[in-house]
Every structure is written in structure tokens, then in C-alpha cells.
Length: 165
Image (cartoon, rainbow, N blue to C red; front, side, top):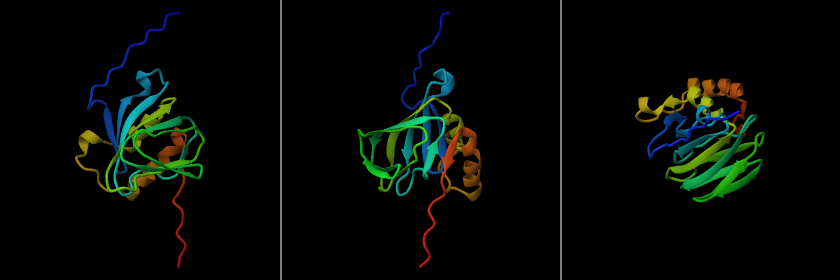
């Protein structure tokens, strides 16, 4: 049996982009191009609170390589301040979160194995070519994210409740 595989070239600025909440996800490789082995995206994380809520992937491993800026990662309760050149790996099932607490955007590569996560982002995100600037996350958008996540094996945890003083 012969396996025919084609190479993949993504020029600078290439890929399919989606706004997911306030962050921009640009997929450089998706599952249908990699035999479902992986998906690779570049993410630009908005300053002052961009990022993700605590969540875990039940189907994929997720790796992060910080290109620009600074992100605060929570990996199973451990806090890591990730700066350019930092690499982190979150195996499937690990609770994790990242947040941009700085005043500047941050940029990172996210490698997900196996592929599939890109379909979640495509389903709940907004195509970037149709949105000039990202609107705030609406209650309807949040509900769509929360109801769609389990379909892709993603468990999103609600934010902690602030104690009433």
C-alpha cells in the first residue's frame, strides 16, 4: 500500500482566521490537510483580559509556543508567566487557562493533536474576514460556546463566584 501525502505551504498572512471572544485565531494547518494528525494556529490574545476560561480538552493535547508578549497560564493549579520563547504542553484532560494581563496584545502558536479543535473554533467563532473589529462577547455568544464545547470534548468551567462582602 502506498500512502500519498502532499506537502503544505502557508505563506505569511495566510490561513483561515476567526474571532473567538476577543482573540484572533488563524489556522495555518487543519485536520483535513494533516490526515487529522494535528491543527496549528497562531493566536493573537487581546490585552487586559483576553484568553480563555479554565477548561480541559478530553480529546486533544494542546501545546503553546509564545511568540510575543506575556501570558499568565494556569496548568492544574500551577501559575506560569510565559514570555517569548516559552513552550508549554497541556496533555488531554489537564485543566488549563491562559490570560493576557498586560496592556499589549500577545501572540502564540497553538498546536493541537490530534486535529479537531479547529472545527470547534470555526463553529463558534466569527470569520475574521467578515468582522473588522471584534464586538464584545454577548450572552448569546457565550451560550453558544458553552453548549457547543462538549460536542468537541471540551469542558469549560464557570468562573469562580466572588464572595459577597
